[in-house]
Length: 282
Image 1: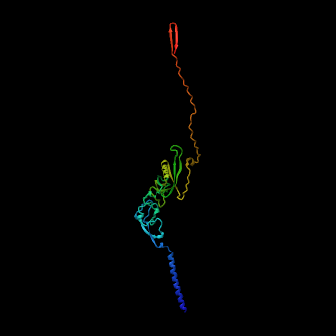
Image 2 (image 1 turned 135 degrees about the vertical axis):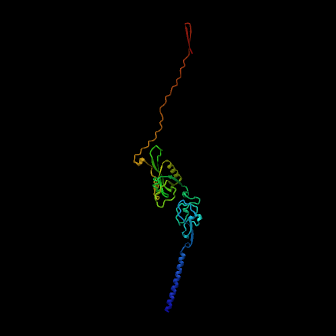
Image 3 (image 1 turned 90 degrees about the vertical axis):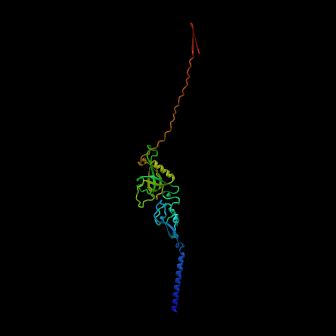
């Protein structure tokens, strides 16, 4: 009797364990999202793509990822991406997103990375002006102008900060910085500015000497420094500017010139008759 009871208890325990295992498996399966069991197609880069590059079919391939991992702005067909310009660098095997591409009609190259309402202005520089070659695409600079506000030969030269926190788009036709971070010799710097600042920069380049000052990209505060002159540099006393002398008007009154009427002498006729003399005046 004891044997039967032990056998029945063992069988009951085995059945209970099986049922408990099945219930646990079903509970775990129900708790898993259905999306984890589904995949979705996504377009990824087949090669490294730099800023301004035009995407070709050979630069793309289609991969599959979990549907729940599909990022926003992803593409499922290569035809939707081919021909568009790159505005943010894309590395190999990275998903190609709409936020990293120019609009469909924007084309490629430098024009495709210029935001609406902004302008790209190029400035010719030398090694010193370009901060010894460290002004490269992606850096931010201030623009200084040194010149003579009164024109050549008048007054002294001054230096003024005309633009602050300006983004560098290209350096000597290069749209990407070197991976090594080393300095590079450039002669032309392209800056991203608004239309009003584009006018300032063009006028500054034609009327004075332009200098670029490299700044930390995290430093976005506008300092608005005052104009510096030679007197400020050498701590000389600033001469006050004398006000313009008013135009002097003559207070001398001209004396009136009297009008002289010439006297007209009368005509005299003298008539002599013998010893008699007669004088007649007209």
